[in-house]
Image (tube, helix red, strand yellow):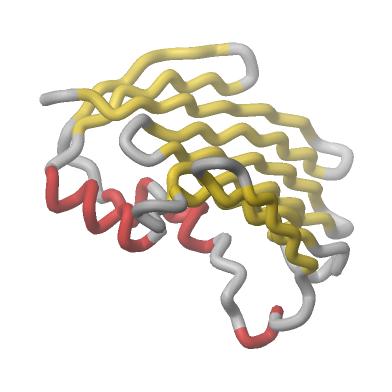
Length: 147
């Protein structure tokens, strides 16, 4: 994902975001994007960490033009629960990335789903429940646009 962020940064990629939080929504368009910061949740979801080695079960589906690789864990200590990577067989480039994250402790529960499609955009959906205080839901649906 870091390479995707670098590529978007070098292109000066613009983005249109439809942001919804607790039922209120608005649209944002901008081109001065720090893509490493913008895609930080995806980058943080990298499962190639020494401490997580052996914690994920891997399943690969071999389609006509793509590989779909799924990494899944049941370890409660790991916030990244599921990663699905779709790779083009010819170019070996990532076409799509899906990540499911969950953090749960005595203070709060956070569920997040992240979707990235190369050349098109990304989506983030989440729910945060803070014990005895509040629940909040959000979604960010973004598409790459021409400047």
